[in-house]
Length: 158
Image (cartoon, rainbow, N blue to C red; front, side, top):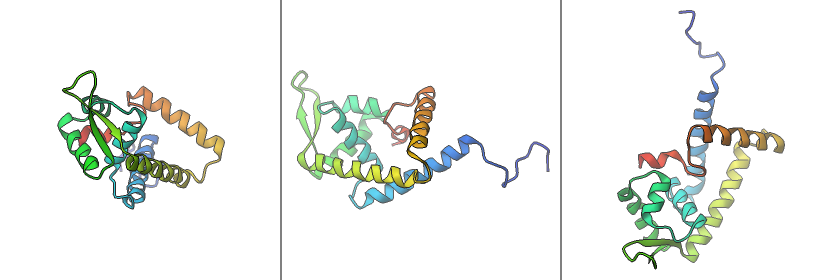
């Protein structure tokens, strides 16, 4: 074995641990929200609409970093279920403003509850002060890497 080769039992690097935990956390979250009949991508879109109601599909596509044509399918799937509605933009009638319906707002509340439970389950081995420190460090790394706060980078691959 070469001197620079790593053995499986050697401690993994931080980036590997972040990737492994991220994949694990994302898979567990998808399992948790499956009971609500939504995907992680739909969940993120609902949260983005809830955070700033009335944005156009084009603005949301830009925020999420996904092609507008791909976002249309996500919006359609949520609109077909009565969770999101398109309204004419009062300042530019060519654009549609996206809003949650009452059912959509209720679903977002349920997703947020699941999200808090998920966070608690993933971080159960940490004290509150450690959780706060970890969140602060991860936010700093995410900012340094140019990630959009609150937006999962997987939207770029939709």
